[in-house]
Length: 186
Image 1: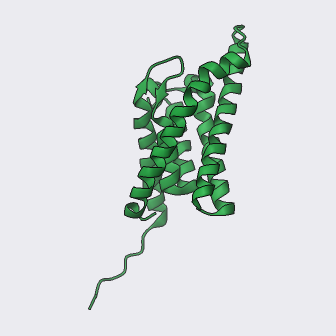
Image 2 (image 1 turned 180 degrees about the vertical axis):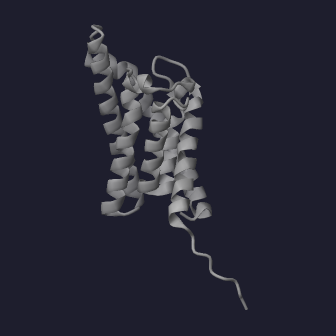
Image 3 (image 1 turned 60 degrees about the horizontal axis):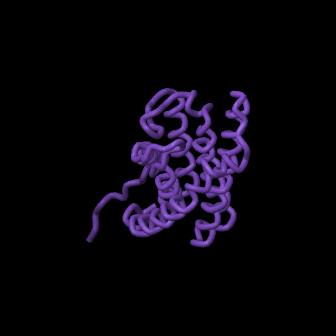
């Protein structure tokens, strides 16, 4: 006979803890980088993984917390960078674009549920929107400095080299999330 008193989980505390852990994971993964003009990091892997394991709401909030932490000066961005200057710089649009990826994932899951095809499609669409926003931002920043860069050059520097690595990171995030999801009991 089980005489245990049922314990009610405080969902707001749980949400805060998971959101904070998601933001920390994104930060740690952003520090794992191969420095180039636009660094190759594990940041996108972490964004995908956090969304898949925490869900749209918690995952998107974790991304927003991550961006805000970096904006206020905590060195959470690639190469331990931080500050509003990073977000206003040439690669800042890609960082802000992670929020769009989260919002698209959250919206799609809310409308269509957590089916595998919905997760894949929403992450692919979110990544395309992140690339689009980041590239537009990149072009705008360069135009303001008087160093106009064409769309072809921007895509060659900031998007094309990252497509295959990001698809691999997405697949890796799916594989790990599938294994950890049941353990985390999200």
